[in-house]
Length: 171
Image 1 (cartoon, rainbow, N blue to C red):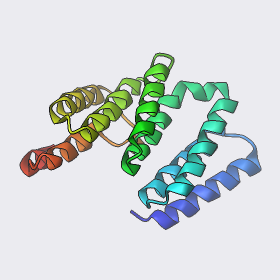
Image 2 (cartoon, rainbow, N blue to C red):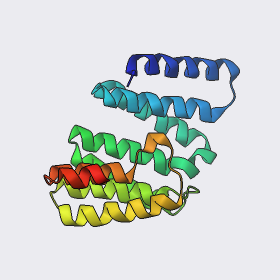
Image 3 (cartoon, one colour):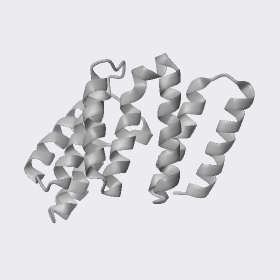
Image 4 (cartoon, rainbow, N blue to C red):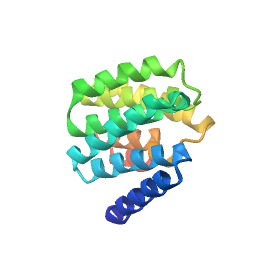
């Protein structure tokens, strides 16, 4: 919850990565975290700049393509948070296309979580519940990075939107 120190740490990590001119994943993760932190602060202009930088870096290094699904999920979730639903749907389409080529076992979970958010946005709560329960089931079999969040937390949010606080707490 200490976002300002997190931003400073991310910027320091980017500086160190540039000085060392190695450890490409350090730079990529730092940029991804900065995008998410700025989105959490609702500083969407800064978040957009970091997302643009993130995807530029992914395009430049072919091995990064294997992990693109996690970053697409972050972008799609941010667009959903902003209410930019058409863009979130476009990111979902990219995520579905990238899932087949992804080396990450989490890719199907990311796809399902974003689909669940889009269903929630359309107030299709039954479908969203089914989708998020499927994501939560898959999630039990693998470990998601903290940055990716949790399908169970999204399911709890869905229950809150449906005025089901006890179910939300149980999740």
